[in-house]
View 1 (cartoon, rainbow, N blue to C red):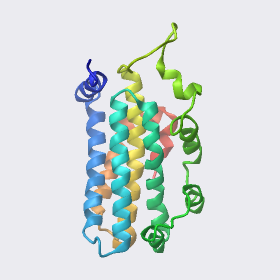
View 2: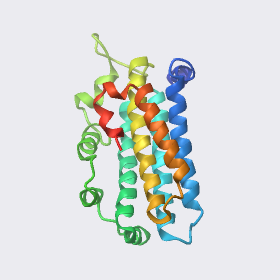
View 3: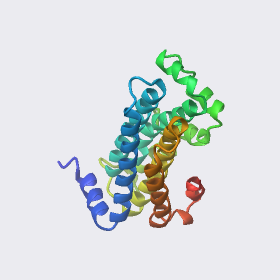
Length: 228
């Protein structure tokens, strides 16, 4: 049994045919790591930096877990990790828009995720509802189970194969989420420190522009997500 067959095939694609795309995702992680480092300079003495740093680190962990599942051919299951990833992304916006809200986190009395999303005018409502219905909880819906069948025989797959087109589409969507997280990380840093993340902001903008091209986002419905 080779449990990592699909992942190994995916990694091979990311070093060859999708080499530019794989490097772009690594760059996105690197920028976010830089932002965590900048937030870490004032922790734990500054509550805003401390809480935002923790939220960003949690979002990064969920992102890495989701990326690994995508490489395993389990993009649908990765949705179970994307949902809390979105919650931590929106928490960064929630704290940035009113820095005193970090006290709610410190005292473990944050309002529910839905209420926070309303407070910030969050744009992920439809996506979150989709994840709730088809990925984050047990479901026998078409979206939740369709990838488990061999067609047209309708036999159950024991493992998910590496499908190049599906991999490209999934890492493309993942890249968009990473750029949006990076943008919010920079925004949080600049809320209290002005131009402290200038280098990261410039690198992120360059990566965003490059990503639109190499992921062919101008051909897809998510192209507007990277317009900032």
